[in-house]
Length: 375
Figure 1 (tube, rainbow, N blue to C red):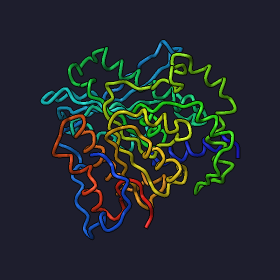
Figure 2 (cartoon, helix red, strand yellow):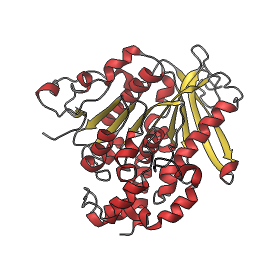
Figure 3 (cartoon, rainbow, N blue to C red):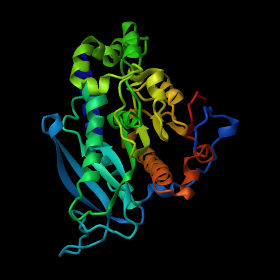
Figure 4 (tube, rainbow, N blue to C red):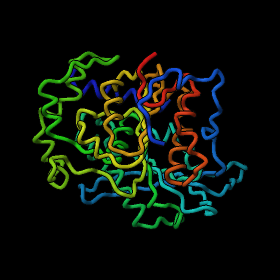
């Protein structure tokens, strides 16, 4: 199976799917046994705010007029139309506790996983429609161009007051999250840096990694196909990013992004240990232990163990696979953890701290805190 077709299949699966405290390297055991009655997930429920949304298109003239569509979800004042139905489109903002921290995410996660949820808890969510989001086979788009889209949108929201949303968005307290390719983007925005020396050496003799979905040849082509056109890739990205004193590529992020929550993230082979050590802000990783596209041991665990962030956590969904986002229970948990994580780091909600601790997570039989080692 050729690489373009293979990754396209993964992309289509994702599209179809959506359309329909510091961590310890702790294995489940006596010290992380789950209770028979797991606790409630209060933050998985809608928050106290009514929500509105508005749509925008930003044009990046520095990249050949690249158009990026953005839908903003925000706390709003509730109004009804002539039929008594609530009106969300262009609803007036609720300024009672503005400005609200900003969460950046891609269109799939923003539309079908979170939608208005985080806005109902006092955030502004920017759902970013990446122009070429179906082109999964182009790693320069996935690992460089897409994070640049996010930073560009952040710059636009920070520099150009949006009519009707003045003083609503706190662009100095920003988070990033997303699932699958959105997780890759979030990891990059956390400060991960491409290590060309590590990657090219890795691809000279790729390890014999076999995923649940595919054989070794598929995974080797998927992860190392870029090595065959590395010079073209480097030239396309440009010296502003590819040249540095330490040999790593420059980070594609922004200091205003203060916390990231990558879910089902991949790309360990592109960053290596040095590139992952560059991640320098709080990270909460979400991963499925039976992910058929992202090998848990070889990617998830490797990424988590080598993150340089002083505050990092990994919550593993035991027995779940990549498509767990179509199941109501995992989705409820992801909403809960996202609200708690960003609420703690961006809103200063100290009362949310307990929801992102080993003690809380270990009460669930289907979750593991830190790297899962198996039963």
